[in-house]
Image 1 (cartoon, helix red, strand yellow):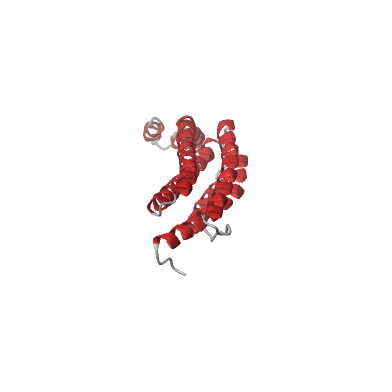
Image 2 (cartoon, rainbow, N blue to C red):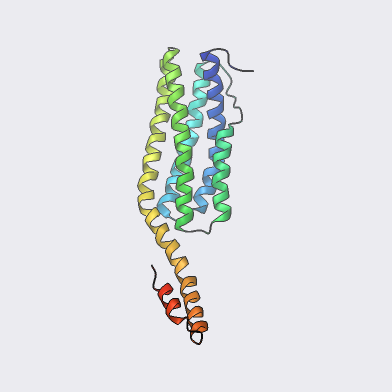
Length: 199
């Protein structure tokens, strides 16, 4: 049933983020296992513990409202987690996968920041200061997690670029060698050499 007023909309959004956090507690261990960077793995493991506390905090909000804690399927989080899982399936372990994991994790953080920011605003309008304070704690934690991931990305992204260049270099050199071998009697050696010198 669609929400008919701000109070009902608040509860709907609360149920949505409750499910989202529960989904995330299942996804973070997989992301940590897939990460090659020890720092990134540790960040995922740390955020898993924080996420579990955030689940309890949402349950506390339900208690303040006098309602049973009940979630509804968060399609937004489901899609973001599926996107991250696809990277794990398709990419080899290394800096490029780590960069993809960070990108996925930051999309999740931005989704949560938007949701908790909205819920805190709704709580303020509805004159629920205790609820606003609880949601505000989680909002700050999500912002800190996002900043931490940005810092880790500053190291991993350049490594991923180097990793990609290294993978491309060997095939291109082999191709250049085969071309120069074939063209040595065909008069095309000059063109082949000029290609191999291109950066």
